[in-house]
Amino acid sequence: MPTEYVLQTASPEQVTSPVETPLKNPRTLAYFIIGAVLLVIVAVIVGFIIGKNSPQSKVAVIIPNATPSPTITQTPVNPSVVPALETPNIAMLPDKQYFDDSYVVIQKSSPHATLILSVSRIEQKQNFTQYTHVNYFDGNTWDRKSVLGTNSSFTVSTNPLLRNWNEPSEVVNSPDKVLGSISLPTQTVSFSSTSLQNEISLQSLPGSTKFMYQGTGTIVVDGQKEPAYVYYSRTYSFNASDLSYLLNPRELTSDWMVFWDADGTFYHSDTHTPKNPTNAAQVLRIGIRVDAKGITHKTSFVSATIETNNSTRLYRVSLGETINDDILLPSTNTFDKSGKKTATWYLSAGEGSTIKREGRTIKGVGLIEHIAGINAK
Image (tube, rainbow, N blue to C red; front, side, top):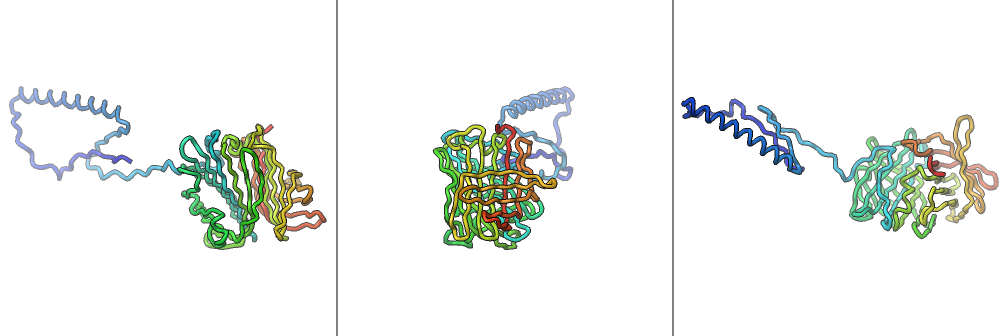
């Protein structure tokens, strides 16, 4: 930042004794006064012209006996905090790369603190835009924060929100190594995983690929360490414009869920319908069950409905052949993410249950996100 100068007049203590002036002749004195006035006018005009054409012009303020001016702190352009509930204006350009790493971490015990952390990197004409966004549920309320920054590559960079980051591949043999940590205005949250294995492909298209891992780990909130469930996914594409719908929920209908029950079974479903399908954005119906032994089942027969019972919304996700289980999740801790009402957009976390194919009901904990864009049809 250029140095700021403030012009100051001398204080009376700084003025030396007056100097004898030879201007005693009235005519000479008049000539002197007229010349001084003309000199001041010329100086003002020249100063105005120079200041006007200067790319960093500053106004010099004359303050008699002023104290030194305070330091001016400017908000850094990189990174900048994105207002909550606002979708940033990021260019999704053709033939440019897109990467997104997302984590869901849910505390096993009550109050089931829930962290959703996503770090997207979108290649621009120059450099990459990194969009870091967090949804955090502390057991009572949701908090959402975002930071927008610029990177020279797709490598994840830390920022005022994302304080620590390690690639999942780096912690396979170091289970206690922190995967990531965030710093919210009132809390610091970090997480690690004891096992993130069993890669599962969620989508493999000409324009984009998405895969996931799930396992167990820990969540640490303000120094308090608790066992947790951990879900991780990565989406990438080499033609970012195909995934522009991800930043434009008004053109999307989607239901997305992760759920772990007391039997140790993990469930995941993802159904979405873009308004304008592309090579990377197609109608998706996928349901996954991973049992406690690690055996994985997939189905494309998935439905998600919202039921109302005594003014309470209940999300029901039905996974068909070959799974045939239902997951129920009440909307007791629902967060409306719609912002400018461009979509019906709800995020719910907390306790629910699984209805097994044989009729048993098992308690569990999970998260569901429902989007219905106003321009989706």
